[in-house]
Length: 135
Image (cartoon, rainbow, N blue to C red):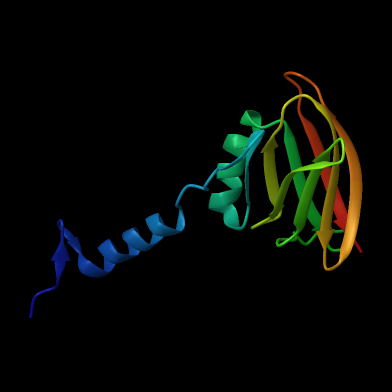
């Protein structure tokens, strides 16, 4: 009995290649009225994608546990400007990249009901990084 083949490859190898390609799908950049964002960073493929995208965004957020350094996903992010919510979302991984117009913003990131509040000032052609840690 012969081996099943697809495009010259044994079927098992072809399926493994397709599965690997499916796992490396590009992250989806989301838009909101005053900018755009992307979150992720689960696994080495997503981390590499986030690293390639980082210079296109002017606010970078990383969430982790203080003692273990364990990355945290599912953080609720609220960004406000002058009392108005400009972005509210849940991070799909420990990294989030946001593009915002220049200005001052209140950023709240909440993990397991515990919020961390920061104020960031976005300057033209400048990036800000928030490294947020929970106990």
